[in-house]
Length: 95
Image (tube, one colour):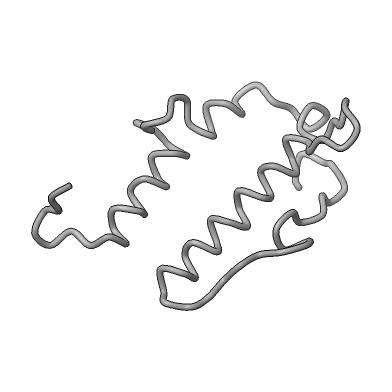
C-alpha cells in the first residue's frame, strides 16, 4: 500500500480508530451505533457465565485505545489483569 506524502502511520491509525467509533468504519456499524439502544441494565447484564458484559467489553476497548496511544508515543504498553479488563463501577447512567 502506497502512503500519501505527509501522512504518518500514526495519523492513519488515529483515523481508523475515529472511524471505528464515529463513522465510515471499514468493519460495519461503529461502536456508538451499536450502543444507541443499550441502556445501563443491558450494558451491565451478564446472562451467561464466564462471558463479559457489554460494559466490560467497552472498558476493555477503552484500555486498548489508551494502550494504542501510549504505543504510538513510542512507549511499551501491554495491559494485563484489571488493566486489560477494568472492573465495572456501580452501574448507573452517570457511570
